Amino acid sequence: MKAVQRLSSAEMANPQVLGEVFQPHVLLVIAVHWTMAISLVFVNKQLVSGGNSARDLTVFITWAQCMFSVATIVIATAVKKYLNPRTSWLSIPLVTFIDSDVLAMSFTFIGVVVMNNLLLKHIGVAFYQVARSSTLIFTVIFARIFLGVPVSLRVTVSCGLIVLGFIVSVDQEMLLSSLSWLSVSYGVLASISAALSVIYIKRVDKLLQGNSLEISLTSNLNSVVFLIPLLLSTGQLQNAVNSDHLLNTSMLLKLVVTGVLSLFVGWASIKVIGLTSPVTHNMSINAKSLLQTFIAVIVQGETKTLTWWAGNFLVILGLMNYGLSKTPSPVVREIEVSLNPPLKNSQLNLPPLSKHDEGWQA
Image 1 (cartoon, one colour):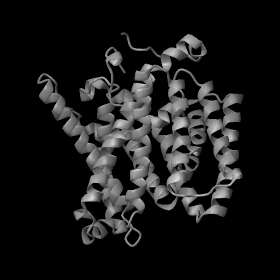
Image 2 (image 1 turned 180 degrees about the vertical axis):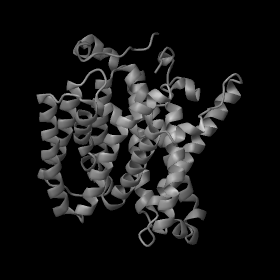
Image 3 (image 1 turned 180 degrees about the horizontal axis):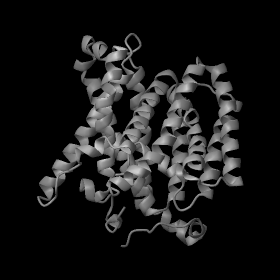
C-alpha cells in the first residue's frame, strides 16, 4: 500500500482524506511521537530537580546529554555501516565546525538546552508549555527582521492570544506556586534561543546539503566543547566529580535515555509529517502539549484554578490558529524539530513503523 502523501489544508477538509489520516498506522506513529516527547520532558524534570538541590548540576547534565547524543549518532552510523558495508562514515570537514553560521547555531542550541533544563528545574511540568510559548512570538519577530517574512493579521491575532494566555497563566502560577520572575526569564531566554536557532539551522541546512544527521552531530559536538568553560566557571564539573551521581546507575540511565530520546523525537516528527501534513503535525503537537499538562497536573496532584486553565487554553488556541494559517510548512513545526533535526530512515537505517509505511521518504 502506498504511503499517505503530504496533504494541504484544503485536502484535509475532505472527509475521505480525514479517514485516511486517521488510519491505525498513522495513529501509531503519532502515539510513538507523543510518548517519546512527553517522556523526554518528564525524565528531564527528574534529572535536573531530583536530589540535586544541594549541588546544582544543571549545566553538567546538559553537557552529558549532548555527549550521549553524539554517542548515539556514532553508534547508529556504525550499525548502518555494519548492515550496509557500502555506507560511508560521516565526514564533516573541520572547517565546518568553525563556520560562522555553524557557531551561531551551536551557541543558540546551547542557549536552548541549558535554559530548558534551568526552566524545568524551577517550574512544574504542567507549566512548561506556557513557559515556552513565547517561542512562536520571537520566531515571528526574528523571521520578520532577518528574513523579511510579512506578518499577517491572523498571525498577529495568534500572537496576541499567546501573549494574553501567557500573562494570565504566569499570574495564576505565581499565586498557586513558588514561581518567580527568574523562572519566567529562563522560559523567555529559552524561547529566544529556540527562535534564533530555527534561522541558523536553515542556513546550516544549506551548508551541509540537507544532511540532518550531520547538523545534529555538529551542534551537539560543538556544544560538548563550548560547555566546558561554563562547567568549570560554575564549579559544576567539580560538583559532579565530588558527588555520587556519576556512580548512580539510575541517573546514568536517565542521561542515556534523554540523549537518545532527544534525537528520536525529531525522527518521529518527520514521520508524522510524511504520513499526514505539517498542519496535522502542528495540531498533534498542541494536542500533545495539552495532554502533557493534564498528565503533569494529575501525577503531581496539583489543583489549578479555572483562570489558570483559561490561560493555558488561550496559549493553545493561539498556537493552533497560527498553525492552521501556515501551509505547507509552519514555523511551529520547525520549532519542534529545530533542537533535534529530524533523522531520515536512510540515515539511521530504521525499519518502517508498519507495513503501510514502506514507501515513505522524508
